[in-house]
Image (cartoon, rainbow, N blue to C red; front, side):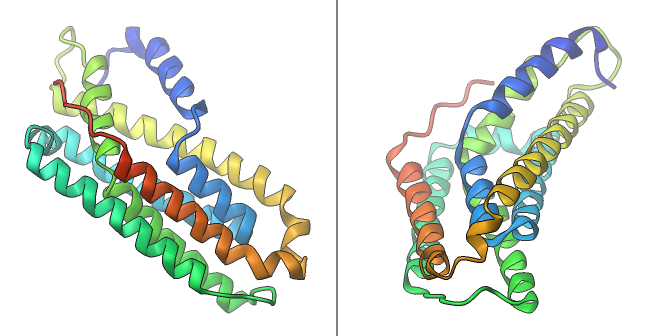
Length: 214
């Protein structure tokens, strides 16, 4: 399904990309630190879900068509930024002075999963990443079509990203365990998450969407 001669180069590029801090890493680390490993795990699943969706879009060529429409990208850029600011404002208005119980943790896990999915789906840079990155490793030397190769490459990228993010969740969630039992920390935990979402929203709104080159 893919040209195995390019696999070492591809894996090297993927590892390098995973090590670069970005919005997804910030969201996963913050949710793990503020609410524990379970919530961080579901946030990771949300990021992976959107990544698989982008992989399918790239394989079908839909993302290429979207990337070629400046108006569609600008609209997605604006909606994504405003959505993140809305989430941030909602968190900043929420106060919590007690440690969350199991039911509350489950509710927070589901909420962060949905937010992670929509945050990534509304980020046009994530879409453009799949459009521009995966085709570079499509080989004309094998029988598989470009769509099939992009599908396999994208799924491999998502699998490696999932493993990396789970390691991040375990590390940050374990280090932050003492904070989760601190009452003073619980007073500010929603405000911390709100600040993260506002930061991501501003980041998205002030950054320019690069022109797609396919």
